[in-house]
Image (spheres, rainbow, N blue to C red):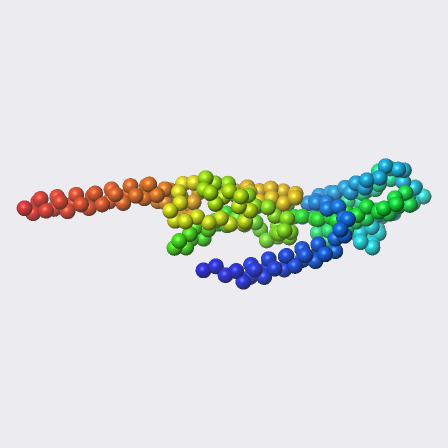
Length: 241
Protein backbone atom coordinates (compact mmCIF):
# COMPACT_ATOMS: atom_id res chain seq x y z
CA UNK A 1 0.00 0.00 0.00
CA UNK A 2 1.33 3.42 -0.95
CA UNK A 3 0.99 6.31 1.49
CA UNK A 4 0.27 9.62 -0.17
CA UNK A 5 0.39 11.69 3.06
CA UNK A 6 3.93 13.06 2.67
CA UNK A 7 3.68 13.41 -1.11
CA UNK A 8 0.30 15.11 -0.78
CA UNK A 9 1.60 17.64 1.75
CA UNK A 10 4.64 18.39 -0.44
CA UNK A 11 2.47 18.89 -3.52
CA UNK A 12 0.11 21.09 -1.49
CA UNK A 13 2.97 23.34 -0.38
CA UNK A 14 4.26 23.61 -3.95
CA UNK A 15 0.82 24.49 -5.30
CA UNK A 16 0.27 27.06 -2.54
CA UNK A 17 3.64 28.63 -3.34
CA UNK A 18 2.71 28.78 -7.01
CA UNK A 19 -0.68 30.37 -6.24
CA UNK A 20 0.97 33.00 -4.04
CA UNK A 21 3.38 33.82 -6.84
CA UNK A 22 0.56 34.00 -9.36
CA UNK A 23 -1.31 36.34 -7.05
CA UNK A 24 1.59 38.80 -7.16
CA UNK A 25 1.63 38.91 -10.97
CA UNK A 26 0.04 41.94 -12.58
CA UNK A 27 -2.59 41.21 -15.20
CA UNK A 28 -0.52 43.08 -17.78
CA UNK A 29 2.77 41.31 -17.01
CA UNK A 30 4.39 39.38 -19.85
CA UNK A 31 5.49 35.89 -18.71
CA UNK A 32 9.13 35.04 -19.39
CA UNK A 33 10.72 31.64 -18.68
CA UNK A 34 14.39 30.88 -18.08
CA UNK A 35 16.50 28.11 -16.55
CA UNK A 36 18.47 28.25 -13.33
CA UNK A 37 22.11 29.29 -13.90
CA UNK A 38 21.30 30.54 -17.40
CA UNK A 39 20.53 34.06 -18.67
CA UNK A 40 17.40 35.91 -19.73
CA UNK A 41 16.73 39.08 -21.71
CA UNK A 42 13.69 41.33 -21.38
CA UNK A 43 12.70 43.10 -24.60
CA UNK A 44 10.54 46.19 -24.05
CA UNK A 45 8.46 47.15 -27.07
CA UNK A 46 9.69 50.70 -27.56
CA UNK A 47 11.00 52.26 -30.75
CA UNK A 48 11.86 55.81 -29.64
CA UNK A 49 15.31 56.82 -28.35
CA UNK A 50 15.71 56.56 -24.59
CA UNK A 51 16.89 59.50 -22.53
CA UNK A 52 17.23 57.55 -19.30
CA UNK A 53 16.21 54.06 -18.12
CA UNK A 54 15.41 52.42 -14.81
CA UNK A 55 14.75 48.69 -14.44
CA UNK A 56 13.09 47.51 -11.23
CA UNK A 57 12.30 44.17 -9.61
CA UNK A 58 9.05 44.96 -7.83
CA UNK A 59 10.03 48.19 -6.02
CA UNK A 60 13.76 47.46 -5.88
CA UNK A 61 16.16 48.93 -8.41
CA UNK A 62 18.06 46.54 -10.68
CA UNK A 63 20.02 48.91 -12.91
CA UNK A 64 19.67 52.49 -14.11
CA UNK A 65 21.13 54.51 -16.96
CA UNK A 66 21.26 58.25 -16.45
CA UNK A 67 23.53 60.95 -17.87
CA UNK A 68 25.23 58.24 -19.96
CA UNK A 69 26.24 56.34 -16.81
CA UNK A 70 25.19 52.89 -15.65
CA UNK A 71 24.62 51.85 -12.05
CA UNK A 72 23.65 48.32 -11.02
CA UNK A 73 22.27 47.44 -7.58
CA UNK A 74 22.65 44.36 -5.36
CA UNK A 75 22.19 41.47 -5.92
CA UNK A 76 22.55 42.23 -9.64
CA UNK A 77 25.98 43.86 -9.61
CA UNK A 78 28.16 42.18 -12.29
CA UNK A 79 25.16 40.08 -13.37
CA UNK A 80 23.22 42.49 -15.59
CA UNK A 81 23.64 44.22 -18.91
CA UNK A 82 21.49 47.12 -20.11
CA UNK A 83 21.35 48.16 -23.75
CA UNK A 84 20.57 51.92 -23.70
CA UNK A 85 19.47 51.88 -27.35
CA UNK A 86 16.84 49.13 -27.19
CA UNK A 87 16.27 49.19 -23.43
CA UNK A 88 16.85 45.43 -23.30
CA UNK A 89 17.87 44.08 -19.90
CA UNK A 90 19.89 40.84 -19.63
CA UNK A 91 20.37 39.02 -16.33
CA UNK A 92 23.07 36.34 -16.07
CA UNK A 93 23.58 33.38 -13.70
CA UNK A 94 19.93 33.22 -12.71
CA UNK A 95 18.91 31.94 -9.29
CA UNK A 96 15.48 31.00 -7.96
CA UNK A 97 15.44 34.27 -5.96
CA UNK A 98 15.48 36.22 -9.25
CA UNK A 99 11.95 35.02 -9.97
CA UNK A 100 9.66 38.03 -9.73
CA UNK A 101 8.09 40.89 -11.64
CA UNK A 102 10.36 43.30 -13.54
CA UNK A 103 9.47 46.68 -14.94
CA UNK A 104 11.17 49.28 -17.12
CA UNK A 105 10.59 52.96 -16.44
CA UNK A 106 11.68 55.88 -18.56
CA UNK A 107 10.49 59.41 -19.43
CA UNK A 108 10.49 58.13 -23.00
CA UNK A 109 7.81 55.52 -22.17
CA UNK A 110 4.22 56.58 -21.53
CA UNK A 111 3.14 53.11 -20.43
CA UNK A 112 5.72 51.03 -18.48
CA UNK A 113 6.29 47.45 -19.65
CA UNK A 114 6.18 44.69 -17.03
CA UNK A 115 7.53 41.13 -17.19
CA UNK A 116 7.14 38.24 -14.79
CA UNK A 117 10.20 36.01 -14.74
CA UNK A 118 9.88 32.31 -13.93
CA UNK A 119 13.24 30.76 -13.02
CA UNK A 120 12.82 27.04 -13.59
CA UNK A 121 14.93 24.02 -12.75
CA UNK A 122 15.62 21.96 -15.90
CA UNK A 123 14.38 18.38 -15.61
CA UNK A 124 17.53 16.44 -14.75
CA UNK A 125 16.14 12.89 -14.92
CA UNK A 126 12.98 10.87 -15.39
CA UNK A 127 12.00 7.54 -13.83
CA UNK A 128 9.17 5.19 -14.69
CA UNK A 129 8.01 3.03 -11.79
CA UNK A 130 5.30 0.38 -11.48
CA UNK A 131 2.73 -0.35 -8.79
CA UNK A 132 1.06 -3.77 -9.00
CA UNK A 133 -2.33 -4.63 -7.51
CA UNK A 134 -4.63 -7.61 -8.02
CA UNK A 135 -6.45 -5.81 -10.81
CA UNK A 136 -4.18 -3.14 -12.26
CA UNK A 137 -0.67 -2.12 -13.24
CA UNK A 138 0.03 1.56 -12.57
CA UNK A 139 2.99 3.14 -14.36
CA UNK A 140 4.13 6.40 -12.76
CA UNK A 141 6.26 9.03 -14.45
CA UNK A 142 8.43 10.71 -11.80
CA UNK A 143 11.02 13.50 -11.74
CA UNK A 144 13.31 14.46 -8.82
CA UNK A 145 11.62 16.62 -6.19
CA UNK A 146 14.11 19.48 -6.63
CA UNK A 147 13.10 19.72 -10.31
CA UNK A 148 9.44 20.13 -9.34
CA UNK A 149 9.47 23.73 -8.12
CA UNK A 150 6.79 24.69 -10.67
CA UNK A 151 4.36 21.74 -10.83
CA UNK A 152 1.79 23.82 -12.69
CA UNK A 153 4.21 24.21 -15.61
CA UNK A 154 4.89 20.49 -16.04
CA UNK A 155 3.37 18.72 -19.05
CA UNK A 156 3.08 14.93 -19.40
CA UNK A 157 2.75 13.04 -22.66
CA UNK A 158 2.30 9.26 -22.93
CA UNK A 159 2.88 7.04 -25.93
CA UNK A 160 1.94 3.35 -26.17
CA UNK A 161 -0.27 1.09 -28.33
CA UNK A 162 -3.05 1.06 -25.71
CA UNK A 163 -5.95 3.50 -25.78
CA UNK A 164 -5.29 4.85 -22.27
CA UNK A 165 -2.07 6.53 -23.42
CA UNK A 166 -3.92 8.75 -25.87
CA UNK A 167 -4.62 12.30 -24.68
CA UNK A 168 -3.38 11.40 -21.20
CA UNK A 169 -1.81 14.42 -19.48
CA UNK A 170 -1.59 12.86 -16.01
CA UNK A 171 1.63 11.71 -14.32
CA UNK A 172 0.50 8.07 -14.36
CA UNK A 173 -1.28 5.59 -16.58
CA UNK A 174 -3.23 2.41 -15.71
CA UNK A 175 -3.30 -1.03 -17.34
CA UNK A 176 -5.28 -4.13 -16.47
CA UNK A 177 -3.68 -7.52 -15.99
CA UNK A 178 -4.93 -8.65 -19.42
CA UNK A 179 -2.80 -6.05 -21.19
CA UNK A 180 -0.04 -6.99 -23.60
CA UNK A 181 3.08 -7.13 -21.42
CA UNK A 182 5.38 -6.74 -24.41
CA UNK A 183 4.16 -3.23 -25.27
CA UNK A 184 6.50 -0.29 -24.85
CA UNK A 185 5.32 2.52 -22.56
CA UNK A 186 6.93 5.93 -23.11
CA UNK A 187 6.53 9.05 -21.00
CA UNK A 188 7.73 12.54 -21.91
CA UNK A 189 7.83 15.30 -19.29
CA UNK A 190 8.51 18.90 -20.23
CA UNK A 191 8.48 22.38 -18.78
CA UNK A 192 9.28 25.69 -20.45
CA UNK A 193 13.05 25.09 -20.41
CA UNK A 194 13.60 21.32 -20.78
CA UNK A 195 12.23 17.96 -21.91
CA UNK A 196 12.96 14.40 -20.77
CA UNK A 197 11.74 11.07 -22.15
CA UNK A 198 11.92 7.55 -20.70
CA UNK A 199 10.33 4.21 -21.56
CA UNK A 200 9.79 0.67 -20.28
CA UNK A 201 7.88 -2.43 -21.28
CA UNK A 202 5.09 -3.66 -19.03
CA UNK A 203 7.02 -6.90 -18.60
CA UNK A 204 9.65 -5.10 -16.53
CA UNK A 205 6.99 -4.26 -13.95
CA UNK A 206 7.16 -7.88 -12.84
CA UNK A 207 10.93 -7.92 -12.40
CA UNK A 208 11.44 -10.86 -14.78
CA UNK A 209 10.73 -10.00 -18.41
CA UNK A 210 11.65 -13.52 -19.58
CA UNK A 211 8.65 -14.91 -17.67
CA UNK A 212 6.15 -12.15 -18.22
CA UNK A 213 7.15 -11.04 -21.68
CA UNK A 214 3.70 -11.80 -23.09
CA UNK A 215 0.49 -13.59 -22.24
CA UNK A 216 1.02 -15.91 -25.19
CA UNK A 217 4.28 -17.22 -23.74
CA UNK A 218 2.67 -17.75 -20.36
CA UNK A 219 -0.16 -19.71 -21.95
CA UNK A 220 2.29 -21.73 -24.05
CA UNK A 221 4.35 -22.59 -20.99
CA UNK A 222 1.32 -23.74 -19.04
CA UNK A 223 0.13 -25.80 -22.02
CA UNK A 224 3.48 -27.56 -22.37
CA UNK A 225 3.56 -28.26 -18.63
CA UNK A 226 0.04 -29.74 -18.76
CA UNK A 227 0.93 -31.97 -21.71
CA UNK A 228 4.05 -33.26 -19.93
CA UNK A 229 2.08 -34.05 -16.77
CA UNK A 230 -0.65 -35.90 -18.66
CA UNK A 231 1.95 -37.77 -20.72
CA UNK A 232 3.77 -38.85 -17.57
CA UNK A 233 0.54 -40.13 -16.01
CA UNK A 234 -0.38 -42.10 -19.14
CA UNK A 235 3.09 -43.62 -19.42
CA UNK A 236 2.95 -44.60 -15.76
CA UNK A 237 -0.41 -46.29 -16.21
CA UNK A 238 0.83 -48.11 -19.32
CA UNK A 239 3.91 -49.41 -17.46
CA UNK A 240 1.76 -50.55 -14.55
CA UNK A 241 -0.55 -52.65 -16.72
